[in-house]
Length: 187
Image 1 (cartoon, rainbow, N blue to C red):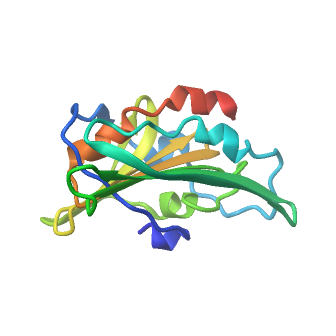
Image 2: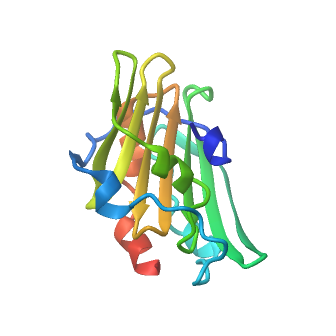
């Protein structure tokens, strides 16, 4: 699914605190599907500012890479910061955290957000939820041990956390450690 958003990611695993989520309607609470506008009306926050919100590696994990970019071209202005992590006991278990400020445009991970719908099967689920008061979409692929959450902040900043080969607890070890209120204050 991340590939459909124009990005690829890693994933992670760990056994920390339980998720701090509650059920809700992510689609209507923070985002109404809209088409991508040709240009942004406000400047994006620099990727260096977004990097400050990337979480430290939880216990049993190590930070592998941290990077970012700010795009300014043809009236479009948006930025991304990301970090990849791996388990210290098994480097094949990976995690990635992406933060994008699209300055109000429906780009990047917002395209996945806009296409999200509730799905439930024995092996896979997509469901709306909330993350620390912000609307979110959670997906779980039990057959691939792939877990992710998209958190929408003021229809502008989106956070995507992905764990590959780990567990739902691993996902929320990263997702719960992000300062969403601080990100909201940037927009």
